[in-house]
Length: 427
Length: 105
Image 1 (cartoon, chains in turn brown, cyan):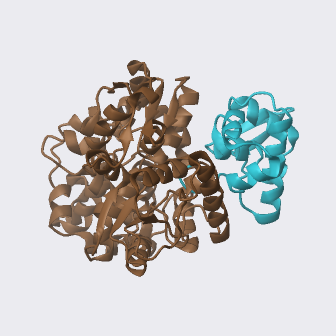
Image 2 (image 1 turned 180 degrees about the horizontal axis):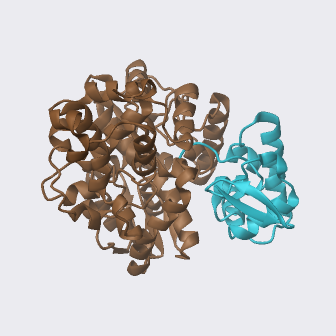
């Protein structure tokens, strides 16, 4: 029997225990290959950080409550009770020492989806109110206010108008606007709330690209947040509430395509996880702005001049968009046309290292020290390229890269894809 | 959770270096945080930003939008990013003694 307070964790586990979860929980052969692929193990060299060990935390509980030997002779089969000790260990390692980057799953000798298991562990912790407070606070802000920074509606509108005025002046054309809630617009665009709150230059860059491409687009002050921190916390119910907001807004405005802002988990959360949260496929197209920019270039709707970006540029691949999301070559296609000196990191693409800020780490001050420490791998990768600019299609990665830039004295500029494209655009 | 030492007194900060008790903030804690995060010596413009953020927060219990910072202080966006290399959140808000904002910062 489990303590009453922990029963909800087993209840949700029971609900989740379908074929995939059972198979992956029972398949690890402890070869240890995942260790060498993980930021945390490579940095700390302590066994507890090996991804397979994180899987063990959950499989030990599975064995304890679902197998005959685990029920009768738990110690013989490494089965463990769900108790204060195992819960504390799960919180520390499953929230505090994993960015859910999925690199371990890529390297697993038998294909165990370790990041999927980690999220299942997080879902158990959600049910017993053990989400790390920093992360839960961002989830709560999103659920309670409609965006993960609690931006009031009127302040969002004021900011959008402010950016639009500047853009109109820059382009000297009153048609260079940011249309709000335009019914029947082809594209509904989204934002990471961090953009209007603190870093709005990426919004004006996107608006400039839409203007140059002659796009019929709109933003809604009531549903624009591309993030879904419930993906990180493990909360599918909250995830459904957040997903539904954008789905409803697309229907209300009658848009054709929902375009996701540059946000790694926002891409994954909406594009791949969202339909599972709401248990329904989307009746509209959904793509990243990175994919849309590729379309614009291919169709000749925008022209880029690489001579406008002459500094050496490298790209950081956000795990949730690249390894976990399938947008791999698009950003490279764009950069090859937008900059004159492009260099890859080693490794890159689907084998790229996480920046260390994924999995909700950026929201968890509780583990900030670890986050900066594991980020050294990314910092070393960047330094080795000799690049002066690091581009990445993810605002979360950008914030982590800004910190790594300071901590490891990289002396680089950090930009979104949209910003570097806007700099290269010929109007 | 860590601590910063000021005038021989220890103050608690969270893992990101934000004061855990924002009410203990004063000009000295601001200068100390600025020195630690690479902002350096605080000039008049820095103080205009810090005071704007601080006053807004005391009144509304949240950090102001960057538009409000620019409008109140007359400082342009690009200059604001130069003044605070860690940005408005992990730079200016932290120096102004606010708790860490939610979201991707």
